[in-house]
Length: 169
Image (tube, rainbow, N blue to C red; front, top):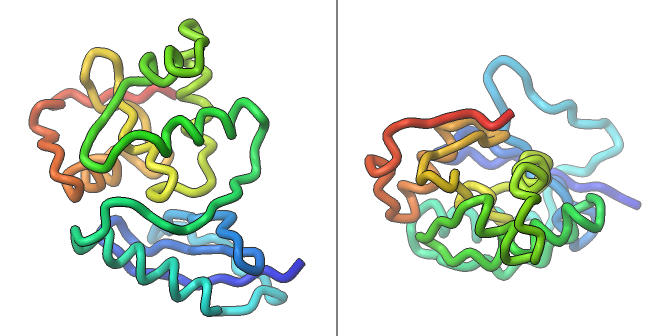
């Protein structure tokens, strides 16, 4: 199985995009302190990667509200169930971890929803940044709360309504 990669500069920092043939498998937020190791057997660039980068650039420019890219994230059946539910959250809207738990008929699983979100291998396209605390606060985000806030603001969500941010994990 051949892996392909590319790096996309974005308003939330450089994104390492990894695909397997024509399937997006991972987006990694690059930090200045640590970058993801790019393996020598990976091939840089592909037509599919160009499509992903074009859609992400359109999203960051405010021109794209829904991605057409097919995703196949690696995870447990429960994680995949959560990520599927999160993908149903419309652009420019938020819901709580409790809402997601209720939507899958597991009202007591809001912490498990948070853990599944923290393991999301395809952030932005699987929009886990749209999930906030039941009390309306911005809560933990694997990419960092500043990135979560930036992504919400890019979607037109006024984060001043969420002045206190807490980390779940």
